[in-house]
Image (cartoon, rainbow over all chains, first blue to last red; front, side):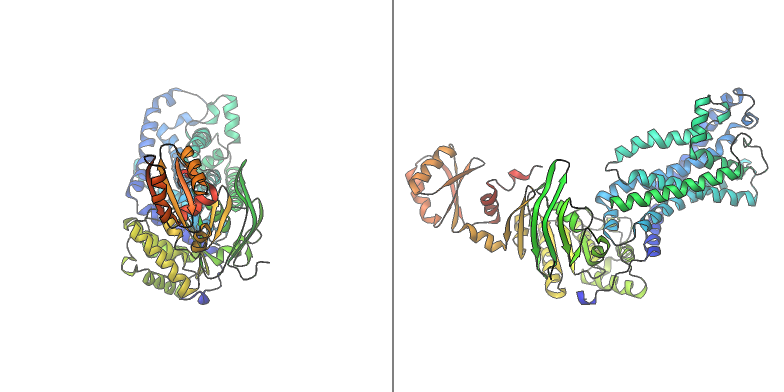
Length: 271
Length: 312
C-alpha cells in the first residue's frame, strides 16, 4: 500500500453513527456485570422502596387519587424511568474518560461529522435503556400488571422518547467535563432530583405547593406522566392528577430535540 | 503560503489561562521525513500535538498540515492525517478487527474497500492471526501495533504521534521506530512525533527541542550535537562553583554549574582530563568525558538538565 493509493475520504454520516451505536451495544453485551446490574438494580429498588413505603403511602394523603392503588403499582412507572435515567448516566459517564484518554480521542480526531457522533452515542444509550426497561416490563407482567398490546407499544414509544432526552442531557453535561467526580456531583445535584421530583416517588397533588411547582417545571414529570398514561390507557393507576397525554408527549419530544441539538453544539464547539 | 511542506507552523501561540504553553513557535517539516518534538513534560509538546490534530484551537499564529489550515478547515485536515495518541484509543472490549472496522467507518471506508484495507493493515503489522482477539487481551506492544494499523487505515500521508512509545519496553520501542522508518521509505509517509526520550529523538531525521513553549533548537540530531563542538567534560565535586571559577581561569574556558556538577564544552577534552586532575588534587570526585549527546544539547541551550526541568 502506498500513500498514492489513499482514497478520497468522505465520511458518511450514517456509517459513523451506526458504527458508534453498534460499539455501544456490543460493549454492553460483553460485560456480564453490567447486564446483571442493569437487570437486578431496578428490581431490587422497586421491591425495596415499593414494599417499604407501602404502608406509609396508604396511610398518607387523601384525595390525590393515588391512594387508591398499591404503592408497588404506583412506583412501577417511576422505576422504569429510573432504569432509563441510570442507563443514560452510565452510558455518558464513560464519555469523560474516553474522550480524554480513551476510545473517543480517535473518534473526535476523525472526520466523522460531530452530529453523527452525538446521535450514535445517544442512540446507543437509548437502545440499552429501551432494552432494559422493556425487559423489566415483561418481568412485571406475571405480577399482575394489566398490559394490553396497544399499551405495550405505547409504553415502548414513550420509553424511547424519554431515553433520547436523558441520554442527550447526560452527554451534554459530560462532554465538557474533565473528571468523573464532577459528573457525580452534577448527577446528585440535578439528575437525581429530576427523577425524585418527576412524580416517580410521590404525586404532585400531595406535595407542598413549591414542590408541586418545581414538579410542573421538571420536563421529566411529563415523561413519567406519558408513561403512566401509556400503562393505564383506561385511567386509574394514579393517572388522574398528572398532565394529559398530549401535553406530556409534546413536552417530552421537544425536550429530547432540544437536548440533542444542544449536545451537538457542545460537541462541535469543544471537539 | 504553505508550499509543499507536510507541516508548516508560523508564530503559533497558545495559553492556558495565564500560562503560556506555546510561545511563537515556527518550523516546517519536509515530506517525507520523521520529525521529532523533543522536550520535557510541560514543554508544550502535547499542546502542539493537539493543535496539529485539530483538537485544540491556537490563540494566534497559523498551522498548516498537508497544506491545509487547521483552524479554518479542520475537517479536511482530519481526513489527511493519521493520529496516534499517548493513551490507547482502541476499545479493549472489541476485537482487533472490530476496532479497525469501526475506525475505517469513521473515515468513510465501507464494503469491500474497508475489508481490503483492514486485511492489509493486519498483515503489515503481523496481526492477522490475532484479528479475532479482544484488544484487552493483547500485550502493550501489540496494542500499539493495533493503534498504528488503525491510524493508517485510510492511507494518510501524514502521521501525528503523541509520545508513541509510552508504556513500551525497549525492544518494542525500537521496533516502533523501525516501523516509522519503513513508513517513510516505503509509503512516503511523514511522521511527526512528540517524545521525551533522548534515544528516540536520536532516530528522527530532524528535531525541534521545545522548552517552556519555545523552540530552543532545531536541526538534525547530528547537526545539533556538532553545534556544541568537541567534547563535553562533566566534573562531580564538593564545591562546584568555587572549582568552576578556578578551572575556568586555569584552562581559559567557561565551566557551567548544572545541578551541582560542573560542565565544560571543550575542543579536546580527553587531553584536558589528566591535567585537570593533577591541577586540583583531591577536589574532584569523578570526571567523565564524552562526545555531545542530545542531553548535552539540551543543557547547552537551556542551562538545565533535561530531567530536572521535567516537573510541570
